[in-house]
Image (cartoon, rainbow over all chains, first blue to last red; front, side, top):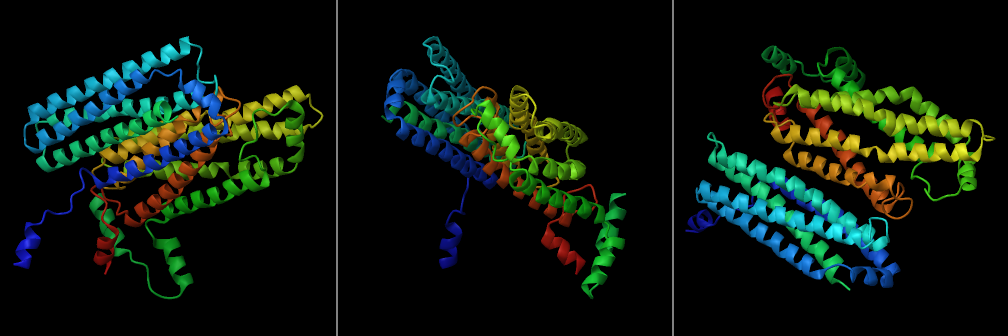
Amino acid sequence: MTDLVDKSKPARFVPGQPDMWAFVLFETLVFTAYFGFYLFYRARSPELFLHSQAQLDLRIGVFNTLVLLLSSWSVARCVQSSRAGAYRAALRDVFITAAFAAVFLLLKVFEWARLVRMGNGLDSNDFFTYYFFLTGIHFVHLLIGFVVLGVVVYQLRSPARREQELQENIETCATYWHTVDFLWVLIFALLYVVR
Amino acid sequence: MSAVAAQAVSAAAPPSGPLHHRIAWHLRHDPKRELWLAWGALVVFYNIFFPVFFIVAQVQPPPQPTWDLATQVHWFHERHLGIPVGFGVIFAISGMIATNNALIAYSMRRMSVSRAFGYSYLLIYSFSAVPGMLLLNIALVVGTLRPERDPEAIGWLYDFAFLSFDGTMGVFLIGSLIWMLAILLDKNRVFPKWFGYLNLCNALTEVVVAPCWIFRRGVLAWNGQIAWWLDMVVFGIYQVTFIVMLFRMIQREDFADGPLPDRVRQKAVGQ
């Protein structure tokens, strides 16, 4: 009876390659260091940071966060569809994810251009150095995300796909995507919200 | 070639007995002796490289980019002995770094990927030693050679040295990405996939060194907490990891073309 219960228990499950979680952990540590430096400099000149933060448009930040959360939702749908063998639906979800990411990137470029027109460049002051640095490095992560989505499309379209390997690769790619999303939520909170 | 070589490796087991007998056997008969020699050379190189830069020459961690000319001249004067002696040693052994690049390129040739990966990596890293190490050394030695030189010229050498050393990280970045791609595509299991992702982490921290061309102060300057300190911590972790990974690759090497055997299984076969 005990054996039966043990067998019916689902095996311990880590989505995708466990190796990708090493990347998640390491990137989280690196970004924790970035955030630590930001908070340190912010504590040294709170007035400057508050004044500079006020020049950011919170609406764009909120909208971009929602767009990226939606992209995470669509990539999760892609994983679900692929698990169910609905590859056509999974492919559609990847393209929806890419579309959300493109909207995010376009808005980010628009926001950068707006700030630069207002006279706030990369080296204007410590806050904007951090603002452009953190949003810029996140931008690079998102660009890599497009390559990752390309891998998902390739996997889904490959006629010689093997079910188990395909699923693992898609889940690995989705893990990367969620990491980029998770990092943005922290960046958004620090740069736009925390006063 | 591969099957015969693999048989030769499995047949060539070191004899038991006194240590010097075993060492002599390895030197004369071990089919992996060239690989071990290359690995040993890279360990020796890094064990000299870091103490020279940090302790003998004292040019790392990098000094302030904002210093005025008088302070820069004083900085050179304080190191008038350490820089020529330390970098004299570096010039003598700098060729040893080739073994590091060669072993990494070898690891990519052992993978199931195109040889273009290994060759690209080898070319990129061979060229990057010039701006990433030798130009810094030459500029700083020239700066200490004649202390009576015009302070403007000393200041020029100071900027040139540190911008060349820190500002050219992009070259290493592409190398890390090539190695990452090879590891992720490889089907011979030469390295675990997580090491491929660690290459990506290293590449992403090297991106943030690039702004040191713009900043003279703050976290992104050439001595900044992010551009130098954090990057150096990540690079240190990455470097120790890849030296261990290369060690394990040599242990597992069977000179065949297929997947590298696991270390445990290889031991069992040897027994």
